[in-house]
Length: 184
Image (tube, rainbow, N blue to C red):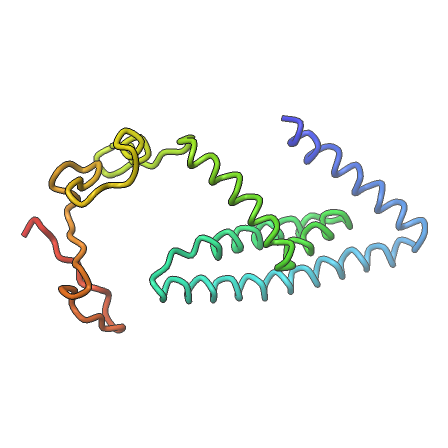
């Protein structure tokens, strides 16, 4: 609640105070020009950083990995873009800082540590198709599924089988990979 109060009350008052102060020192036209310039520079940076994040995300997915880092970078770039839309020097500075990769790395590390603690504590749960809670299921079994324990879907496992590499069909990049359905 206090964070929202600061965000929606204190920050706009500080922005207004700084704009008035800058206007009295530099003059109104120069202050408006600087505010617009910082917004345009930030928008250009957000666009280039966003495109780069999407490219890294696609490369990570193409390697068959989960693009968690790239998704978090994309979210931080989106937040930076939204903050840059807010007029004022404080928010423009915050937005431009969020667009710098080293600053994003620090924030990404903080967010990852904070959410990892919540995930390990079981504060979040995902729900499977049958409504079974995966995190509650793994906690009751003491960890991930073993070779004979097929998961929260029962002994038969999910509807699909993941083939070992030696039995998997050859991957053709023009077509999506084939999934063998156990129901047939």
